[in-house]
Amino acid sequence: MSIKIGARLKIMRALGIDLPGLSRKSITNRPNPPGQHGPNSGRRRKSEYGLALMEKQKLRFNYGVSERQLRTMMVRARRKDGPSGEILLQMLECRLDNVVFRAGWAPTIPAARQLVSHCHILLNGKRANIASIRLKPGDEVSVRNRSRAMSMVVNTSMVPSLERPEWLNYDETKFTAKITRLPEADEVPFPIEIHLVVELYAKSM
Image: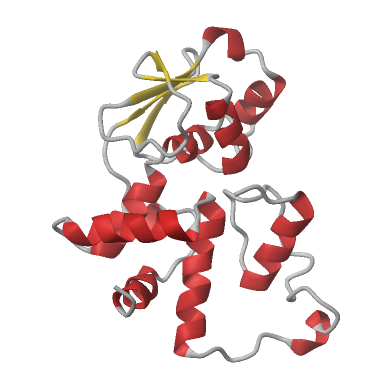
């Protein structure tokens, strides 16, 4: 999902929320919906379907996944033991591009995806260039030696977009981040009513 910077802000304003994975900017100064009537229209009361759709769009745009990818993950989550909503969030948080972002090497997930696709990232010591790879506890991600001097990596690692999560063991001297456990639903860095997403897909599966 390639989205221009201006469009990212419009997306967040339309959803009424900051999405840290999508943009480092905030809608605090312009919280109203985009468009000619945005400042005066307020936020209209949404139907049950509209609310569920908005929650799903939060996931899609923050993590940069397509509708097809999200639906496939939902199908897989429902096949596993445990709450399917929490499992879906774990799948999204444990994607390689998101782990690179949460480790603090890129300002956004699109930027992290670029690092991965350009082979700047190692997974368990081996080159990895597929952003959608799903990691598990024990996996270690690192920045290649020749890529550690990149201005984006250096600057972002000093001032990461988000505080590094507890489920990542980060070593700033080695530029490594190891997954120690699966993330919890309440560790997702933005408010999400995941049960609405589960109910939305349940009606169409």
